[in-house]
Image (cartoon, rainbow, N blue to C red; front, side, top):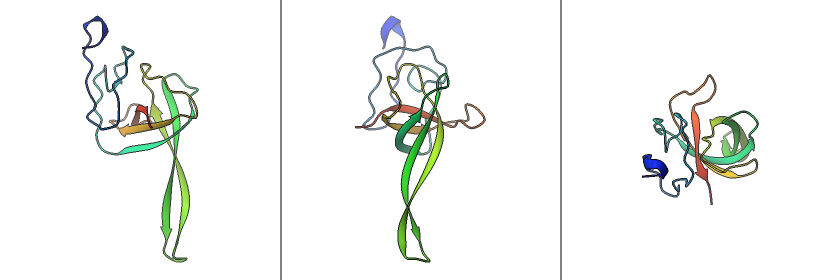
Length: 114
């Protein structure tokens, strides 16, 4: 139970701590009704300008079979950021897939990565 008798649920992913702040966001995986399912990724929060939304950039290696070597690639993922999390631009975060929240937002920030 959180503050004011509000239920705080665990997301069920190891390495992610439940936030100490309380929010009233329906799209929060801890205090709202949003379920996390599917992919769990990590990346760097590079933009946090919109209200409760941001952009996470992740780097990964892709094997090029023609040249038989790896190349570094990056992708940008639009995420929902609950107000109970204290994250800012430049933080390494863990994100989880959820149902579509907006046209391009299908991931939610779960917390800071270590």
